Length: 372
Image 1 (tube, one colour):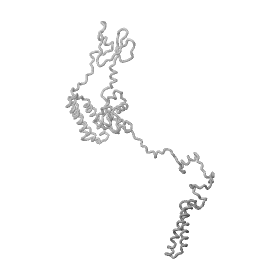
Image 2 (cartoon, helix red, strand yellow):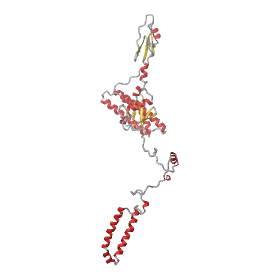
Image 3 (spheres, rainbow, N blue to C red):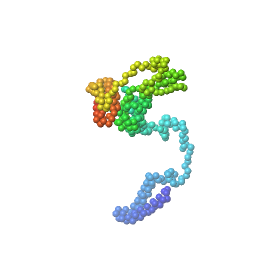
Image 4 (cartoon, rainbow, N blue to C red):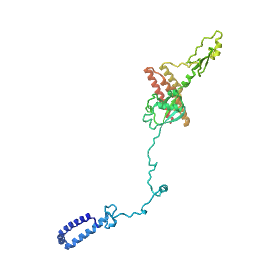
């Protein structure tokens, strides 16, 4: 049986349709010669047959027992039995997850779904005396300008186990260019990820150890005798003083003691013992220093560089070692020496130094080109 609203709608539609058909029955009868009543009842029969078929197609049924669960009619409470339910335990979930027979809803972390890319650390290749020390820094620190020269210098001090004072004197070179400004980002000097930075340590001993060696103790005993020794603990009546690059003056000796005996008792070396010769005095003036460095490069290093450029060793290992030796020697004994020359405001000397630096860097570039 149809719902009330639909039944009313159908009745009105059929009545209107019947009126239209009745009005036109005379016309149809005149044209076809068929009884108008037959045409009317045939049309109504077709309509009545088409309506149920159309309703069943769109989910309406003539059987009241098969009412759709989405309908608003109350057809009674459904009969629910225990067999209609299935209880899932923890063991069932675990077993189904292991054999994969029953699909389960899982929210466990799936590494395949995680497409988060963890950026790799930036790396600088610190080279010192033929040894390469890969040093890692936070990702994108070099490209973002966060890594500064002083950070690299501090890392070099840790890698080479240098004292704090000596680490500050370390010179960093990248492609023949010295990284001078401590607060400047290394990218300002062209340094990139996986770049090679050469380290040159200052020549000579650690300043801290040299200062310790210049320190002596003068101990005055109760009877007036004195002795000179190395630094140590002080007691009552002991005096301490530093000797900086000069001999301590000896006090006047007593009348009963000769100067030679006093020297032997005090442990002071005789006056006639020769000192080590002082280093040869280098040329003074910026022009003289620049000429000396240029002469050393032209006579000692440039022929070796030209020989390597003309005919590099065929063995890759030997070629790399030879290239490293020439590059490090040129940087340490030429470029760094040129950097240490003070032009003292002399524009001609400054231009001369700049030309020499450019000439040496051109030679180093030619060396690098033959390494490949």
